[in-house]
Image: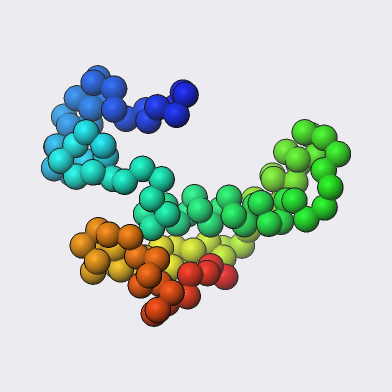
Length: 119
């Protein structure tokens, strides 16, 4: 990815994806099934991971880039299997809500019915 351009929309890549998966099985921009870019509803792993790392890595001052890299690595290695399992379970619930809402944003549904937190 360079300059914010998604890597999967170049013509050769689209042709390769279509060849292997068929146009109807690809969820992306410029295909029949559009995947909304940067959708918080459909990217819970990414949202959770960076939110978690931001919270734990920046708890104290960081002296330099080496320390920042070290803290990120340390905290990634400290993520437990139970935590990852919880993230996956919550993601499945979010995906089910997306399906029930016809692919629309679900933040309003989460605030009413299910907690929007990962333990």
